[in-house]
Image 1: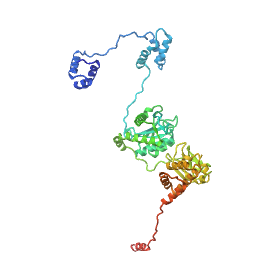
Image 2 (image 1 turned 135 degrees about the vertical axis):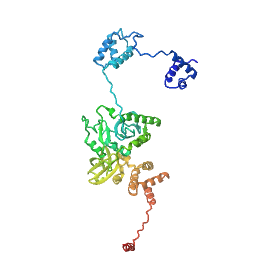
Image 3 (image 1 turned 45 degrees about the vertical axis):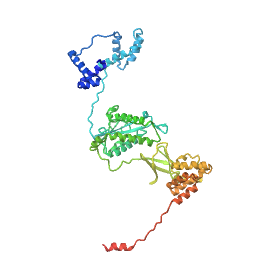
Image 4 (image 1 turned 30 degrees about the vertical axis):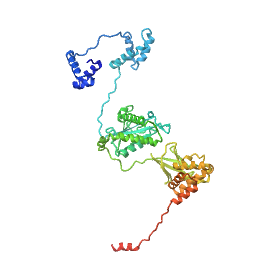
Length: 488
């Protein structure tokens, strides 16, 4: 049987590490043929020799006459590239050199740099990573993922926290590298983990390290970590490899998310919350593979402090004539009686509380800049007095607390465009008086029966559906107390 040159090369390659039968199978030839080739190879194989440099050339070196000049230029400035040198040669010796010789020159310059160049590549030293010794965090931009929210581009960062030993990780969507997102991301990560490492390392971001003051830390960051009994750490400026575990994990995590998005067939999400849920599921599945090493590492981690860290941002805001306040770029409604007053807003990562002196007025989920949180209960009385303002009200869409309310309003518009606004506002007022759940149930019934959801029918349904229980309060018997006294 005649074998190809490639088959023989594969046979000789695999025969060095495997038995003849396996090497023959990998090379795709019969065992007898392979044995014959190997036996003949052993007979003809010359004795091993010490390799000697080749002293001949197969073709004339085109750069032999100018190499001394090129070498002098490289020694003077080793940053010169082969293409730049080739352009100079063509300009200086137009009859001797052509552009297609650049590949040969590139090899010559590369060999010179390896053998004689001044550059020395930095040596990395592999470290023994101890369980529970440290945690790391970093921010990573995700524009390359091409995420869309409702058809619009969604530029964002991910706060990425991980344990170098077990590779356990946590991610959180954020929009800036600030002290607030740094502390919030760390809190969320360690509370999900249920423990903290002795040391936490970041790079030299300004939220953790004062600019130009490597070795010291921002007082707020240092105080924050002291609450968890954790020591802050940072890598040397320009040495991202010192925070290498999370740096590498950034790339691996985004690559994994990219693959999941390809499987999903779409990079568009209905909301940021849906995208966050997608990331959370992906993180849980990745961490499931690290369960054993995490259990080993948890034995060396420190417990969380008993008291949570509480450091909300505080704002002093004025209530506008629209009965709203602007806090951190988002708009929130307050009761109209506070129009013109100065209020105090405490902003936490996920909630916001608005106070008048020490009286809590509003507590609601925090919105991103540009968001709106308008509570119809704060303004419905005034809208009932001015129903004509509802049609073009800037915050009209926020006055549909549920989808069924929007459907009811659309049905009222089809029924009577002129009376729709006033009738809908009366429905909202009924929701204030009777409860949003009762009104929602009434609207569901009316729309399913193809009836106009006018305010009169809604009120009637709410009254018939609310059954007030009969409560009987029985007078206690004083003999019971006498019985207790006799037992003493």
